[in-house]
Amino acid sequence: MRWSLRSVPIAVLVIILVTLWAVHKDQRGLLDDTAVAAGLPPDFVPDLRRGEELYHLGGCLNCHAGAGDLQSVPAGGTPLHSVVGTFYPPNITPDPATGIGAWSNAEFINAMRQGRAPDGRHYYAAFPYPYYVMTSVADLVHLKAHLDSFSPVTNHTPPHMLDLPFSVRLGNLYWKALFHEPVEFVAAPDQSPEWNLGNAIVNGLGHCGMCHTPKGILFNDDRDRLFAGAPALDNHDTAAPRLAGLDPIKTLNGLDEWSGAISENSPMHAITLAFSQHLPPEYAQAVAIYLADPFP
Ligand code: HEC
Ligand code: HEC
Image (cartoon, rainbow, N blue to C red; front, side):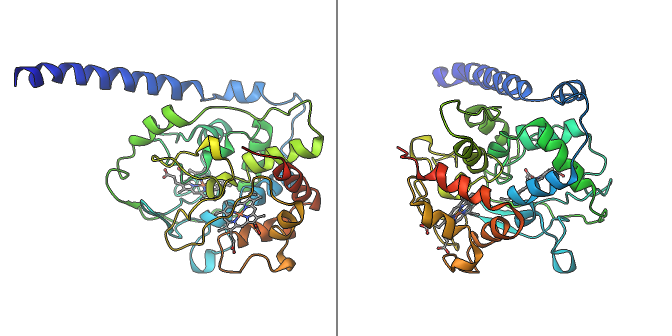
């Protein structure tokens, strides 16, 4: 009894120290307006075409589509089922009240790279920021400009319906401290430009690992088994097959809507459509070159 009473202050102290460390680490990944400006070339102008390409590459609409009539705009609210409950991805149209119209570029970048909301909330990794983090400041400003070009839609999305303990949002702070690094993409000098482009797509905005890399007990990517194939994040969906070391023909077929390799009700289908309808063919080729490499 005396032992357990005495251990209470120690436990409290440990929690406080871990929290301070987690907050400090999280803070390091954040940018302010000055840092964003410093990350852009002096003559920078947002490029809406590039922004649109990044929007397709990141599959934003796959999760942020509105319901019914709003299917083709990222007004949010369509349920995203997962093994921990149902997420309702928010409205990312430029509506100032219910969307992200009032956000600065820095606030958008912090959400996309550090999983941090302007009001300090920590996002769930169901929002693929652990992958999006690789995207450059310039590209994220192009992407934000594209989102800002949508007509604002007023749409309040429902709160997520998650099981305990996942419903405790603060848990994401600790999750990030353990598994999230504010890394930016760095090209490997000993690899071809195509391989590097493939690397940036697959590990960055393409967030292929979200479905294709097996997860650890806290839904972190098992870094020792990258792209080794994984069961679906939602129990009802199809498992995602192994991509590591994949024959380039298979990769190209998987990203080509006409090949018939991917069925229409697969979660992969939207990604296939993005590559075959909205992205230059060099992107699929680069992905195929990158994935063909021997992985562990
Ligand atoms: C796999 C599904 C998924 C994809 C793909 C996705 N998101 Fe999200 N996004 C979410 C979820 C879920 C949330 C809510 C996270 C939370 O509440 O913690 C979210 C939140 C956000 C937020 C925060 C909005 C707010 O009001 O707080 C922004 C901004 C955002 N996403 C932008 C994007 C952009 C831009 C893309 C495409 C590059 C994208 N998302 C792709 C699932 C996704
Ligand atoms: C939302 C989950 C999800 C994401 C994200 C995702 N995939 Fe898939 N992928 C799947 C599933 C599920 C299948 C199995 C499809 C089927 O059997 O219909 C699949 C199949 C494939 C195949 C076919 C493999 C084969 O052996 O025939 C390729 C290639 C592929 N994905 C590449 C990618 C690439 C590249 C990315 C990133 C740009 C990606 N996937 C992102 C879920 C996903």
